[in-house]
Amino acid sequence: MTKTVIDSAVPAREAAAAATGRAVAPRAGFIGAGFMATVHSRAARAAGAELSAVASSSGRSAESAAARLGLGRAYDSVDELLADDDIDIIHVCTPNTTHARFALAALDAGKHVVCEKPLATTVGDAAALARRAETSGLSATVPFVYRFHPMVREARARVQAGETGRLLSITGGYLQDWLAEPLADDWRVSAELGGPSRAFADIGSHLVDLLEFVTGDRIARLNATTRTVYGDRGDNRDIATEDLVALVVEMSGGAVGTLLVSQVAPGRKNSLVLEIAGTEQSIRFDQERPEELWLGRRSGSQLLLRDPETLAPDAARLSTVPSGHPMGYQDAFNSFIADSYAATAGAAPDGLPTFADGLRAVHVTAAVLESHVSGAWVEVSA
Ligand code: SOE
Image (cartoon, rainbow, N blue to C red):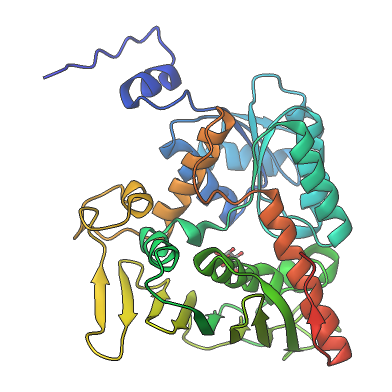
């Protein structure tokens, strides 16, 4: 039995890399101190990164996050963080309207980037970021993390293998209730911090990314209607961002679908569901039951349970624990960050969501808002 000798003189990152055969994990810096910064930091630690530093809305907030999350040095400003030569990758975990500015500055500072979605709140900013990332040669990813549930990869592999036949129809939804109370408030509610779209930019983007990722098809045009249920919430008055949106989509391949996105659906906590129907078979994935995949047929429908020994290779790759040991949201996030870090070392993991995918989501979001205003079908830019 090989005994791994931990040589205290060798930094933990190099030792972890030697033990796992992975590339040395990068030294990570974080901008932001909220829920997503916490999720990112857990995933970074699981990937063997050195959590080197943090900047936030203030020096005090950075110090608190550094102490609470073990993020190393606390900086008074983002500029000081980006000037730190001992940081390889930046995690942008701040309100939406700051993403573009911070992600661009990080790329310009020669840092790899993981930027929370939405990548930007305008198509122009998102396109500029995608171009900058492309020319930089750096890894620049966006956490469309639901792609990293193994059973999502299994669904995608079965579609790619032709099991579903020609795609005919899609039903999907992403329902939450954390804003269902009239007085529930959040920075996302304000267009000034969250951008012009709220529910769709925040979670509808996940649904559409999952739809296009699993089917390999693209939304060609859509017709959307949004609702702002509460015009005033706490300190936010005259709210223009949407609580919910219903849309009909037509895919490039001819399939049609209906999608509902809401953050005011009582009892629904993080209910992301996608069901596709083809000429041969239907497939349904429910994010709150990520160990399962429903395969629907005229006869012999199945509920497939995650078992790495029977999954497609890409699904088995992401199965970090055996069957019967349920994987969940943080596991998917951990796999996303591990693949993002591998990309900083030159790897090209299958299905890694990059700034190009972030731009795609911003294009779809813009089409949703345009269609709501015009009431007409809107073509979605490629
Ligand atoms: C809030 O709606 C939120 O945290 C989103 O911002 C995440 O992207 C989603 O995965 C869970 O819900």
